[in-house]
Image 1 (tube, helix red, strand yellow):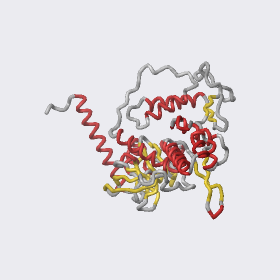
Image 2 (cartoon, rainbow, N blue to C red; image 1 turned 60 degrees about the horizontal axis):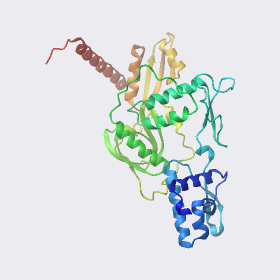
Image 3 (cartoon, one colour; image 1 turned 135 degrees about the vertical axis):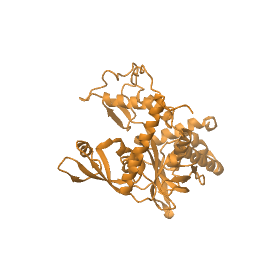
Image 4 (tube, helix red, strand yellow; image 1 turned 180 degrees about the vertical axis):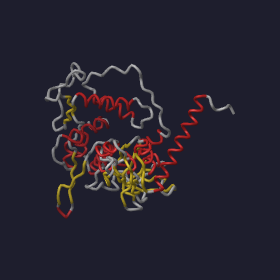
Length: 391
């Protein structure tokens, strides 16, 4: 009977068995409890038992590669000093959070997010987490996902469409906008998507990656070996946080500066590393663009003067560190700058209301950038008004 069971059914049976247990289960329990394994494990000879055990290991590794978080946990010391291992699939980690749209008073969905007729009616899997959203929060989430899903240049547009379907499964879809928004995909989208796919697989399987990387500080292209710890998106750029093996330190890599990423294929079912328990990806996601830099370049201590009333905005948003609060309402603030480009563009966007005081080379770089922008706009103005003679 086991031979008639497809691989998909075998996977589903294994997932169902693991999810149904609150505590880790042993290999023997898996072999006896999953129908596709039980017959050959219980009634077969030693060769059959070894074959079905290898099949379980393959199934487990393939499910992990799909993102099913099957954990391996020690169960304690067994005889002869060996450590027995068990397998666990947490409901909280496996099931998607149940989304409930509520009013401020805790009531059910309000107009604009009415459940469809015959929808799930609020049923959820026991142990699955619940996320409560106000109608405004749900609308913003749906609008954001819809924008990403309709953006051809977004590397994770397919995933955004999937998330949008899950979010709006029980909700009436809003009317489409009268005027669709058009996007121009940035260059290199396909390459970035391929790198993200490889890096995501590396994160799921805890495998080492190797890639050429363009170092801005040294203006050189170097081969890097790293253990990926996390990926995040910041101001339209993807970043990898990982342990640089050659430098033996935590480093930040911009994905757009990578070349082709190679995944370590040696011993594919065995992790190369574990992410430290004290690692927090959030420590990187909240940093400003000029504070995101993966090279070993020493940071700059920049001093910026904010004129009144922009100084009030800088104070309210806690921009930099306040050094001096002057009588005319202006302020001097300090910034740690690891990437000059984003910092210069940000200060330039503030117009004449902010100026770099020190260091002098950074202040001069701001003036050069302002002149270059002015020249570019001047040339554009000449072209649009026909003031440039035909060549």
